[in-house]
Length: 294
Length: 264
Image 1 (cartoon, rainbow over the protein chains, first blue to last red):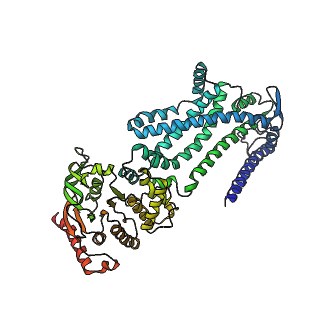
Image 2 (cartoon, chains in turn orange, cyan):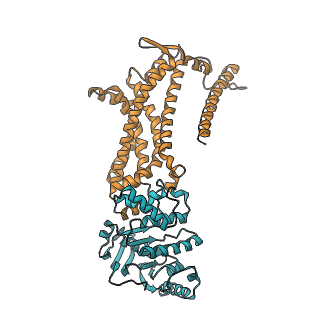
Image 3 (spheres, rainbow over the protein chains, first blue to last red):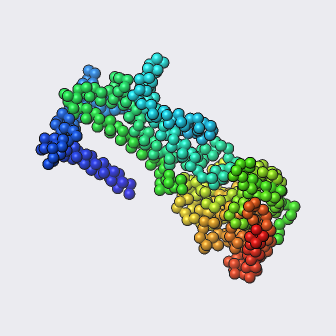
């Protein structure tokens, strides 16, 4: 059963990938035939299909094995991206962990004191309307003034994106137990903390994991945007920025690094998925958000 | 009557009123002038139409609500103290088991909160599973059980720490008729075996008559005690349900419920 499931995931992934490549190449081929017009019309295609705008998928893949310079060393692009990706992953992971801790903390605070919910929730919502691009330099400048390493500042930018879904969904989850469950704990004269650990937190898990998947991908976005906006020396964001400036010379390189970023996002998503499977395994098919809400 | 001694009162309700949202436009007097004494070891049903305050009365006994006036005494102490001492177990209409805990762990929850050792908990939950006739289901998750089985687990959980009082809020209300009748017999067996006092909320006339030594008939708006019907049918079996004496008692309860309609 388990092996079949893994196989299915692998097959779906490969098919999806082939589909994207086929669409890309099909569109490009069509543009080449019609001189960038929709077939049989004089309407121009939204994007040009020449090799500069849309390099061949094989060229992008091939570029991964071309040698690039990393400081004084020379190494294939895929290794280079892997190195940069590892750095970005660390930033994202720290940001994610902070976001999880802060989000959960805020949710528990809002659960404990209605006043806190009324006072905090609007600000938590407002926080997400501030554009990250504007915020990033502020955080980094503060960080540098206080001798905080850039990697931590970038993590804080990722935290800013991740704490929000965690706080909102955790609060909903903590409030999800129904009256009978709460009365039961009251009948045991259970103190607030016991009810939190034995009832509310376990019940919140089903609500938390979808938010954690979102938070994981957001943490990568936050880390990359952070790197780009403060001009770090390393990381995927730096690579993307550099290759964007040299787009006219080798567009394949930029595409390859964007693919790298996407893969990083998918990996962290997969990690949370795995964690969910491990945590919820014992009650698989038992614990579902819809069931808790019913 | 079922050998209960007046002096050993399990629950004494003395001049209790319960008003919700007092002073507000949606003020509701749920209960008014309730006096009731329940003897230790008794099986008492609270019956009445929806909105008569029977569940409210049960929650006052359990100190899940506090009376607006009057006082509730449980085993000689204020209801609040009895709750803190965990003198009673509670069973709800929906089993209210924790989905993420196995059946045994659900039964052990109150023991866990009391700091019992793992071995003692395991021993007691096994004992309780035997009592409710689910010896092989300790390792299952609640969702893998039928509604009737879940309710048995819920009863086992309520009895796991051997409370002297069991508060039950329409526990069989969500079960089908067959399961319900079976569970009623099971409950009576457990009641006899454990000697615990039971306060049982229901809106079913046959159920209240079949189970109880006394049926307390409540009338709505404001909820008050209309009458109390003594039921002495000896030991109940499935045959009791077809016994003329049972029908006579059920009719008495029905008429007590109707008396109120006519009066109103």
